[in-house]
Image (cartoon, rainbow, N blue to C red; front, side, top):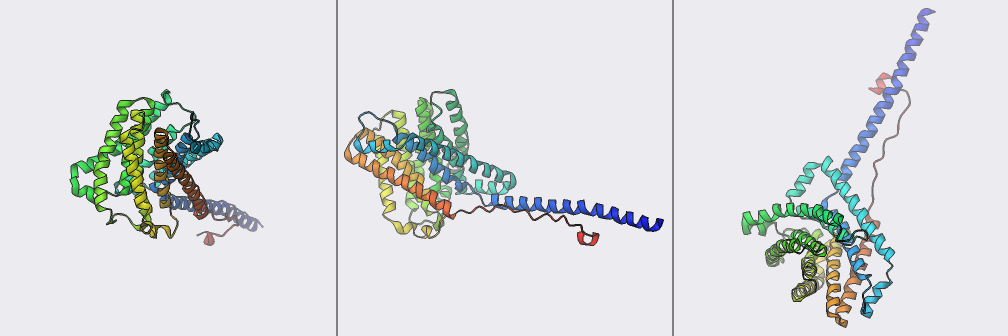
Length: 381
């Protein structure tokens, strides 16, 4: 009897130990599965997704300018006053939320896949998109419904957002200068204009704060390298060797840079003078040159991709320049151009939001089911 009872107690002890071991192993497998799924999801994320926040933040600035009440405004401009201010606040909040979300994912990628981020930094296309988050921050700062340009917080934030742009300038422009024409002709591509746009947006915001010298400094950095880059890209545009067909929408950046230059110079001088008009007409000509060649974008339009968002920001930049031009000229044709470009910019952005919502699927990591059934030692092994 004693021997039998001893065997039963031993059996009971073995089963009690088996159950928590099985649960622990299953929970560990669950955590590993979730971590691997999250890691693979983050690995697919790249800096090119910041095109979305760039489009939304520039749209927020456009809406802010269009709904501002202007004394003796033209009848065509008064049409935009029908847009409620609540719509602008919602758009600005959406742009801010999108930027925060994308930034969080990219920071997560820096932690989990630092080598991939380093490779993107060394890539001649990927490095240019590292300017975009800071450009978005400057757009959101300029269109902010909460901060005034003369406040201390506004000025501190300008320095915080401009400092990374200057660091990237030293890296990129330094390579162009030290390695010469052959290097530039090899790595130059339409996305290289994002570095120029970063300087021009920084100059525009500085001018609105009243920091004229800082604005001129940023403008000179941007416009001087734009001239070099424009000539280089203009000469090799027909080749189209450095970009795959899916990335051809970035050719719209050709007219985004002169549009932002006209806006920056307008902010520095306080009026849309001859130089600003010349830059605006250049951007308008480049826009017409691209839209008259739809076959250039035929392959990129066969399947939706995040590269489609490259259409939106340049159109918004051109619409912003046209709105300032219309204020200066005050003619029917100028306001008609502004109305067409602004409407086109808003429609393209709305369509891209719809297409992105329809074609984007987020697969969340699913943990395996917990198996709490007691197993023998052999089954557990």
